[in-house]
Amino acid sequence: AQSVTQLGSHVSVSEGALVLLRCNYSSSVPPYLFWYVQYPNQGLQLLLKYTTGATLVKGINGFEAEFKKSETSFHLTKPSAHMSDAAEYFCAVTHKAAGNKLTFGGGTRVLVKP
Amino acid sequence: DTAVSQTPKYLVTQMGNDKSIKCEQNLGHDTMYWYKQDSKKFLKIMFSYNNKELIINETVPNRFSPKSPDKAHLNLHINSLELGDSAVYFCASSQEGRVQFFGPGTRLTVL
Image 1: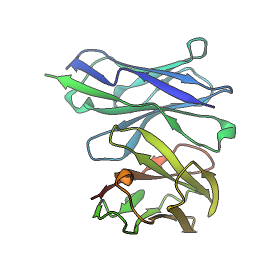
Image 2: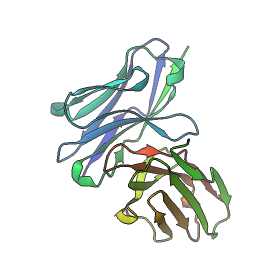
Image 3: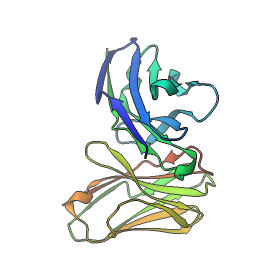
């Protein structure tokens, strides 16, 4: 079985400060990992994904994440927060034999202070 | 040019009623999904169809019945609606197990 834990249901950052959202996963086979963002009253939009290859992946809007197998983590970062980054962020895991069944973490709401 | 669309966006109904939510994708994908997001924002897969064939069927009450008339459409029919069915339902699609693209969601409120 696969699972995802996102540490911190709410994160508050100042505009211009580092954004760090934590994601730890559990998977018995090599995982495919994703970060999605959900703006208020909207659907989910893919930020970035890791399947194979380079462990540091860059996504849209200046976000990046690093796959660390030894730590079973896939933390999301952005060097400088912008007001438009205020949203809900979801980490998700699947693997090749899972029929593309995504298992999501509980989400982290990001608040950006001016 | 909407990739994954859902109708309606909002649905308010009484307990015991039957309702349907429609989903269409114009991406040419072969797999479509239904997810439920509860009031605490927790997202969980309900169903997945590949080329009109059911491939994922999570532990969902049999009051929920997905129907895929063709590869581009996946509808969700719910019988005898209950208060606990109130949630946001998201449709998604993907091609050959790749990235899933999500629709805007349908907020269902059962009174």
